[in-house]
Amino acid sequence: MVEQQLAARGIEDQRVLDAMRRVPRHLFVEPAAAPYAYEDHPMPIGEGQTISQPYIVALMLQAARIRPEDAVLDVGTGSGYAAAVAAELAHRVVSIERHPGLAVEAAATLEALGYRVEVVTGDGTLGWPASAPYDAIVAAATGPSVPPAWPAQLRPGGRIVMPVGRPGRAQHLAAYTLRKDGELHETNLGAVAFVPLIGDQGWPASG
Ligand code: SAM
Image (cartoon, rainbow, N blue to C red; front, side):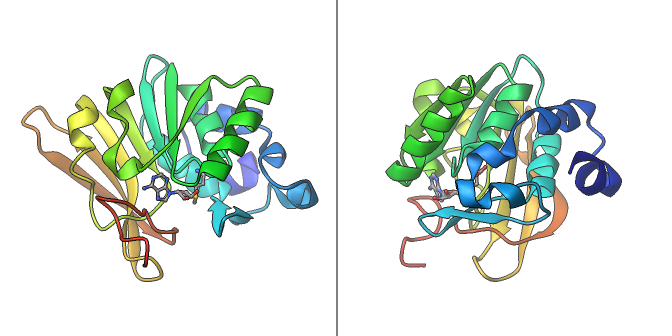
């Protein structure tokens, strides 16, 4: 997976490649799906949600430029896989999921594997102010734009990586850096397809 799907496609951050090598992705999917866990596509994880394609997880975490001393907010815990990779890279990871069942299951998987991730249930479009500030916020669900709550929870120079666009329509992966003047500087990382970021500062639950 790491050589063929990540390094060969331009993921060059060695810490990200090493982290992706270490995290046992097959333990974050249903046992019946484990033989296919390292294939080059997203997979269902229940509640109509998916574990993202390995390449996209690596691309997002590379764009977040996570340093060993960083605090990271992972929005959309899902299976907990991306949170585990982030925990290999960062000092502290908080992961928020709106589906309580997914959050409970992901927390159990992460704990069983020894990952120290604070998994919380709630609306991640509001961030998680109790554990702010963060050096990076990484979201695995597509929103209309950056939720206004997020930059306020970032340190200066902090990064936000998230898909932007309507669910089922054109979306792009955006990487933002919070400049000292409070403005977000955006880089477009290309077309993607994600499930919706549903919440107060995202899309409404009805679609
Ligand atoms: N990163 C996950 C993994 O490694 O398995 C995959 C995430 S999945 C593509 C997107 C997740 O975002 C879903 O589990 C969905 O329930 C969650 N989600 C959507 N809107 C959310 C919100 N406002 N707050 C928290 N989680 C949200």
